Image (cartoon, rainbow, N blue to C red; front, side, top):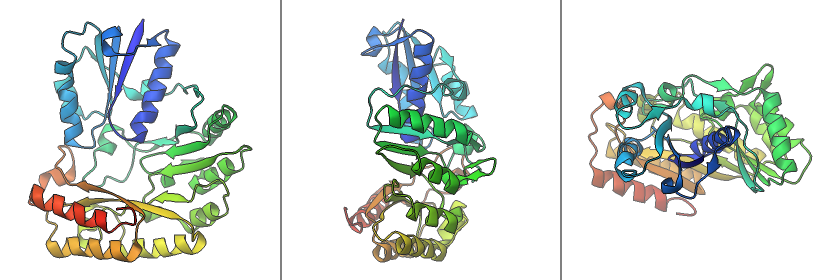
Length: 328
């Protein structure tokens, strides 16, 4: 029996797909080069953006004529699940499929999920509704996996979680976990994403500064440079707090490369509020910025808000911010 795996979404979904593949191979399946050659086609979807969901709704047409059993898994809202049941043969719970640790096929870059789900309920995000509340993997399990991956030749270890710095395993918080990973023998670097600025502690900053294996790359999502928009987004920090955090991080790690995530055109974002974001970009001088144009997502708080910024204006704002980064 052969399987073909189709993945949509971020690094977390890619990491999940590696574990889904390991699960299937444990059941006796072998990878197929294409859907046409497969007995089983598994689509691992992402629900963060409506556009990603729409692509999955179009998958049955793309797979038309293929006799393989078609299965859907991944981040799925309850309201979407009913519709997808009509389009796919089965829907699998991703949490039942991702418990199997994949083998490292001589990969230099590997993903290690340390937690799943989120407790933050940002206004634009469906993760708490698709992945549930925060659940952290035991630190012993994470450390065992990292040791094996390093032994197998991994050089870049990415620790993943919807909010990695909320990690907690008994008395082990995220700062203590990264210190333990740093102390694992071997030549490798570790990265992580994505932290929330509201609980990026001094302990974590000091720990990272002392970790020689920390890559000196940090993605620190800001989402907006205006306090009123941040409040509407339910981000629970201010621009001033974010700016002070960056100052502390750069003081301890002057060689840090800083990237961020930001949303332009959030409902009600005025020209002045956007300009506040541009001012923050000019002040902080991010190395890279991942700029998203807001799009309504059913199931989120912001879906109830009026999407009142034109597509053209969102595009203009994105272009402005992109040019304000060092590598724009």
